[in-house]
Image (cartoon, rainbow, N blue to C red; front, side):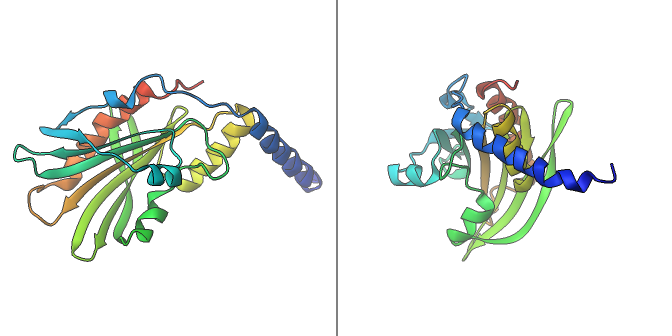
Length: 213
């Protein structure tokens, strides 16, 4: 054991070879269901599908997506829910973290944290961001879901992606994002609403994703 460091380079080389080989045998994993079946009624709000342009889809690289704006009885938008699914992640076609994309769209992070969401007997951590873009403010919850996991840490997600690609050839994953506009006074408890939406969406998304091995 005292000479373990002599084997470290060989171990790293072997792991690197596994990663390279996994690229050749990576498999695309189709959804078990249709994203269109995700809830259209949440917390008394009704969801309407929004279209992402072909150019935006090409940049994002997702295989399938659902983007819905949920409105109240007066058809005033209250929040949106986005699910972007990647059948496999390859060079140039990986999930773009909202943490990196939102500043590029003019949003500034005012506060960030990881919040627990209790779903049945399980607890998952999700990312919570409070953002501002000039006079507009918003609350964002997002997480990554796939291969039997719900994760918030980008570092953990990348590590799991590399490991699973090497060991199983599977890299499928979904990004789930909830956006609630703030400041107009209509949503008096935005975090409570975001938690409720997350508790609904996690098992619904899990039922559509490919089964974990």
